[in-house]
Image 1: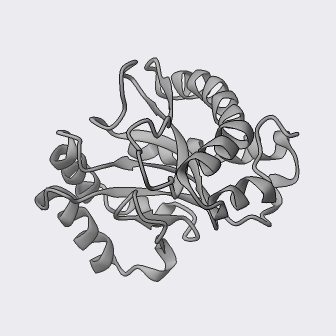
Image 2: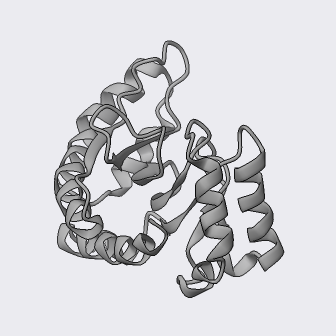
Length: 202
């Protein structure tokens, strides 16, 4: 079994009915990879950002009935959590994986991040326009930068700033047949390339 890259079997975990069976498969198939990615990229991001980064692998511990629709490893400078600050995240839903950077609604830094990104708006046009934006990390729906007008982007950032539930994450999406899943080495190199680009908005 691969140590880092995701396979068809991993994506199919999210088709399993029931909380316990899905969690069992997730823990067996996906979590070891997230732990490995966390170990590698906490070091990589520490070097890239100049600040110590800690990996946080999703445990889904609060779930009592509904099985998770996604899972992830997030990175932040706080060893106790990541939701309260801008963070990098690697994860997957049933139909795609992703590597993103952004802010979710729990963060008190939302307004400052939104202002910074609104002031440096052109950076989003310097990213590969195949990169996608998520305005709600709980949902799989994302929109490619190529499909967003400047007004769409601005509205997303203003929503992050002004709406309590506002979120904004940007990064690369990987479909199950993506070439990056050809090997562990290929996937790691691809993720490193994405992070090298996203660090511009760090």
